[in-house]
Image (cartoon, rainbow, N blue to C red; front, side):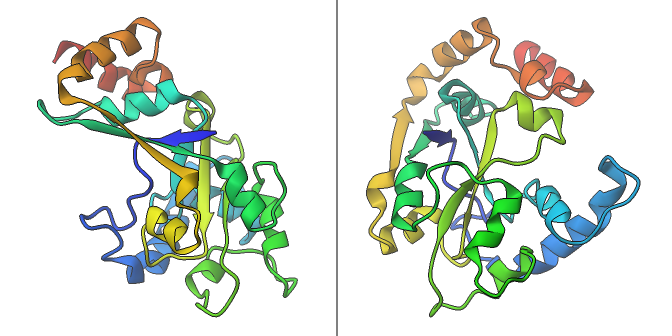
Amino acid sequence: MAVADQPDRLGCLTPPHTKAHLEGHILRHFLGYARPYLSGSTRRVGAADDGAALRCPYTASGWTYSPLIATHFATAGLRKGVAAAIWQLDWRQLHQAFKLPQLALLVSDLQQLFDDHRLFTPWQLFEWQENESAFACLIEPPAFDRRLVAQAAAFTLSSDTRHSFDSFLKQQGLSGALTKYVLPAAEIGRVRDQLDLVGIDERRLFPDLGGLASGLRRYYG
């Protein structure tokens, strides 16, 4: 099971995906400017950069194995009177439908999705043609970031970059793999208190100075 606060936010607009044609350009700039912030003195173009690309919100949908962590992201920063939504994904059902291993894939495993023996790069997803075989999969990113580890993070990749993830699943007859849970607006405050009591907060999920400041601002704000 993987859960998230929403299925995806490609384009970060409502409705989503209205800037899907810019995805490749955004990723190219992200990889170019992100290198100074990544560990290691040298980087090669290819699978190593694909791991960095998973940090870019335009490339993949972010998930967590923890329902409590998903609830944190669904409720933190909400305006008063607004309900929250949590999505549960049966990713094993996806892998079974697309004939993939019943394990979350590593970035290096993505090579299996392509038949031309090229090294996998995100650009191949952007060039995907509708007449090619569709796929979606769950990926566990390399643990190069403390936030990824603390958040029990995972990502889904889909061959369709033009539609929201739930729309893609519906087109593939996999609507049952995605379930939406709604937290009523009246319960958000109580749920946030419970999350703080069990240590699900910004200080622990973002183990750096930014996370500490965010947690203090929300708690005392």
